[in-house]
Amino acid sequence: MARHEDLRGQVAIVTGASSGVGWQSALRLAEAGVRLCVTARRQAALERLRVEVLQRGGECLVSDGDVTVAEDVERVVRECVAHYGRVDLLVNAAAVQSYGYFDQLPWEHITRVFDVACFGYFRFARAVLPHFRRQGHGHLLNVQSMLAAGSAPLLSAYASAKHATLGWAQSLELELAGTGIHVSNVMVPSVSTPMFDHAPTMLGWRPVPVPPTYDVDLVARAVVRLAKRPGRTSVPAFLQGRLMLWLNGLAPSVGKAVLSRFGVQMQTTDMPLDRPEGNLFIPVEEGVGPRGSVPPTPAWKRFTATLGLAALTGGVVGGAVLGARGLLRAAR
Image 1 (tube, rainbow, N blue to C red):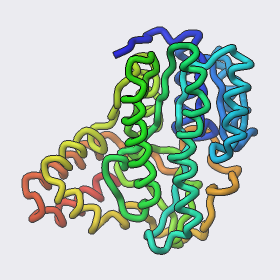
Image 2 (cartoon, one colour):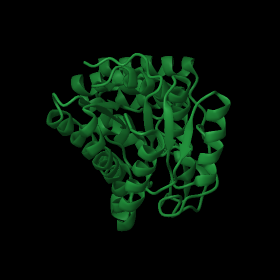
Image 3 (cartoon, rainbow, N blue to C red):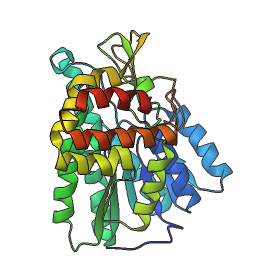
Image 4 (tube, rainbow, N blue to C red):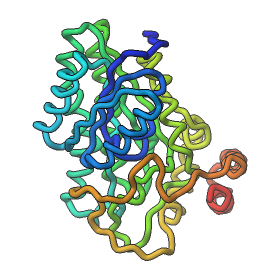
């Protein structure tokens, strides 16, 4: 496992940097001394991020672009290398999602989710890999999702895109063994990003993340740790992370029982909302910055939910329905 404990002077491209994990990861990397090239579709949002980075003593190049457009991707990498002379780290963080039952999702929504959350990662990796190979070193750091190792109703397109992205990253790691180029992944739980304020919904109700929700900085700090020690897969959350992986291995029927019965309820509110397109194809002005309208779940509620999951595991399916109601109330 490689170690680069001192990140000062390294150059990183961060995608999806206009909000959420991308924004906060860029700030944390800047604090560690990384020189940034930030990209997303919203240039005005990126300029606001640049101001914050400069206020913290960092360096930041803004290069707006769409991860679904190959010419944009190649231009961003080209501008980064022209400005800094090299690129050492790619943080793939761009993502979109669309809420709805699979057979009710417009086909163009399904393909767009894949084009951003999966193929966008591929495009940027292909653009930076020639530079990494010439240098003899580099780091692909992919912001993944816990849904890459699981599933949820209403998010079939996003979950399958993240399954594909994680499989690609694991295969790429094998191909790059011994080249000095490392691949890392951070498995993200539900976090307090504006993604849920942007996402289209076919349901007519305001969507929310599967509870509990963690602060976005949990992931940003994990990104910095992986940048310092590449070549790993990080699962920074416990309840909606390591515990869920363990539970799925021990008693997968429990998770299926909870999500099939309560998964839709967990992700919807009683607030009517007409947002059939969201930010899938055209960026929106709202939701700039790291955090969205859904706050992080307090730690004491996460602890209560952990006890609920422990009870579910003991009773397996028999107590799943009753326990899940308590889990939902505690996580909210």
